[in-house]
Length: 197
Image (tube, rainbow, N blue to C red):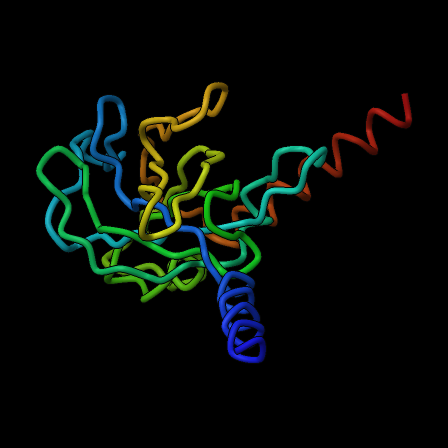
């Protein structure tokens, strides 16, 4: 009997080791719309796609920057409502954030015609005379759920005092690499001129 209890305890402990936190992937709430900067209208339908990006929370570490979010929980084909909002259901974090753990999240959105991921859209060749539209949300800290007894954390309504919620954002044309290069060259030239004076 002791062996059975010991085995059951070990199995349950190992299951808890591999447990994952859960979060609701959606932006349905006031002030959370995703907007097309060219038209000034909220995105709608399936011409745009969004992914939820994740980063584990580390106590005492500064808030992350956009370029640190390298883990996309999964690219989604999303049917945006006419209001620029969507509700894509529950997503599970990697095992680095357990149930009821805290993690950082960011939504990245882009035009489907330019690629199957946000990163692909950033480097895609212009189509129809213009580059892809893409954008990122603010970075939010969320207390996750556990998929059964604790409801999934929400990106919109802050589950814990002091955590900021998701805000709306614009999808803007991605600058061409040549424009970025010229900008950096100009900044370098200004710094050289300033140094001479």
